[in-house]
Length: 161
Image 1: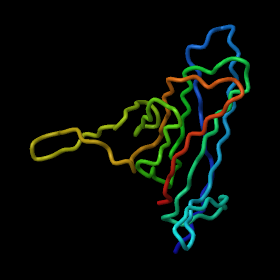
Image 2: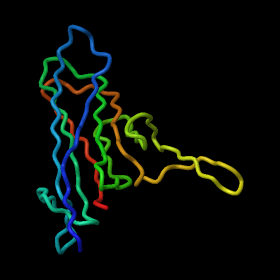
Image 3: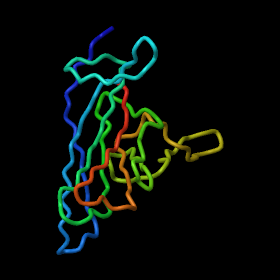
Image 4: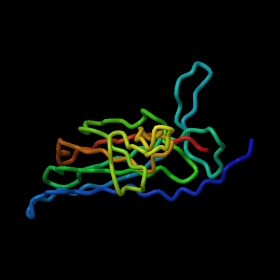
C-alpha cells in the first residue's frame, strides 16, 4: 500500500465573543493528534502520529481548551480544520458540553448543522445534504462558560484518503 507523506499543518482557532472589557478569561488551546488503531480484541488504541501515514488510517484530533484566567470564558467557539488529504468521519465530533457542532464545506465562510449542496437532477436543481467527506471545517458552539482553571476537550476524526 502506498504510504502517504502527510504534512501536519493544522490550525485550531478560537473566538471569544461577548466578554466584558474587565473580564479576564484566558483560554489556551492545545491540539493533539493520534492514530486510531484496534488491538486483537477490537479495543481502540491511540498511537502517536508518525510522518508516514497510509490511506484508510484514521486520525483523532483533540482540541483541549483550558481557561487559565480568573473569570469564566463565555461563548467559546473552537474550530477544527479537516486537513487536505483527509476526510471527516461522520458522527465522530464530540459534544463535550457544546450546544451543537456545526460544519462548513467552504473553508469556514458558512456554517450549518447539515450543510447543503445544489445538485442538478432531471427535475431541476435541488438541495441535498452534503456528504461528510466534503466538510472542510467544524466548530463547537458553546452555551456554557468554561470556569476558571477548567478544561474541555473537543474531539473529531478524519480518515486519510
